[in-house]
Every structure is written in C-alpha cells, then in structure tokens.
Length: 98
Image: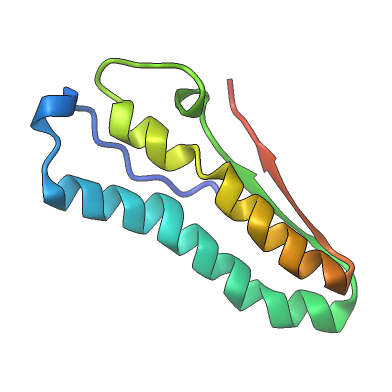
C-alpha cells in the first residue's frame, strides 16, 4: 500500500521548480518505482496487488494545492503500469480518499 505524499500548499504563482521536483519525485516517480520494484516479487508469487491512496485534490480544484492535485492525478500512469503487469496475474488499483 502506498500512501506517501509531498504537499506544497502555495498559490500556483508561488510554486518553485524545487517544489515541483520534490512533489513529482515523491508523488509520481517514487510510486512508479515502487511498481517496478514490486514487479518481480509479485510475478514470482503469482498473486498480489498494489494499492495507491490518492487525494480528492486530484479531482477537485483547491486554490493552494493545484500542483499537489496535479501530481496526485497520475492515474493514467498507473493504469499503463497495470496493463503491463496484469500479464503476471496481479492488479494495481487506486483509491481516492475523500
């Protein structure tokens, strides 16, 4: 289960390149690498799942959380990973916390 997140609570015009790198690194890249690392273990077991805990900020505009929300809306990336990995009889799902 993945519930990691970096939150930058700033007006969109105040988000820096460092904020963006930290947010994407934690919320998108780390999650994707988790899939890559889990892949051989889940393939060997023939069973399992990866659950990502997302945020309502991914689907609702929140004034000071725009970049955070965009980083949590990475569902398409994980759907692509799930299609690739589904050949090995496990699935990836995403939960949205409201």
